[in-house]
Amino acid sequence: MARQLRFAVAISGLLLIALLSGCKSKPKQPVVVHVLRNLRSPYGVEMDHRILDYQGSNPTLSSGQLIVIQSETGDYKEMLQKQTSSSEGVQLILLDSPDDAQANSALQVAMPHAVNICAGVKACPANVPAVIPPQVTGANRDAAQAFEDYLQKAP
Image (cartoon, rainbow, N blue to C red; front, side, top):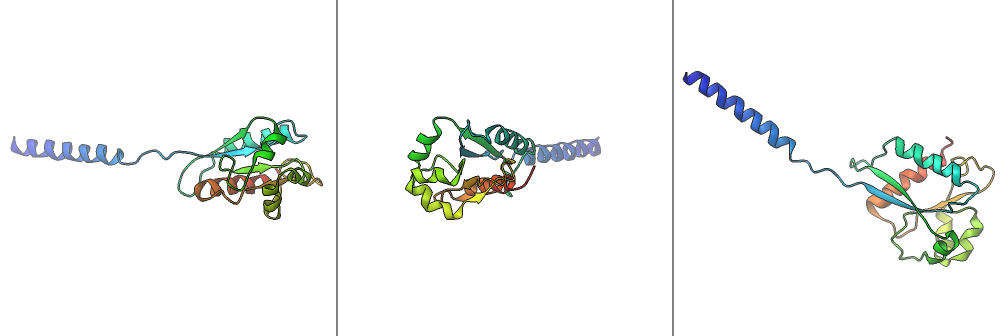
């Protein structure tokens, strides 16, 4: 009888340890990449497909955080004009053409770091710049960079 009691206590202890060790990890919050883009762009429908394809692949950072892409809505030209060197609400800006940067001095400063995503939106030989504003840092920058890298590749 004592042997059965010790066995039951040992099994109960192991089950308790297993249950408690599973409760330690807290789910990581996703990193949302806010994308400023022209929803009425000639490349808009193709960009919608690229975003859906990217999201369907369940992209994550090396930390395991899920990357979520969210397009900002509103008047494209107005949203571009409102971007400043301290704006933190947008992590990636997709321009219809390099000329769109002329509306904003902060965008003009960032343009040397823009990449051409024409292959990703089937718009080649057009130049479709993607810009990560310099003030974007940390996990937000890493997530925006991962999406920008994805957009540079042909589907």
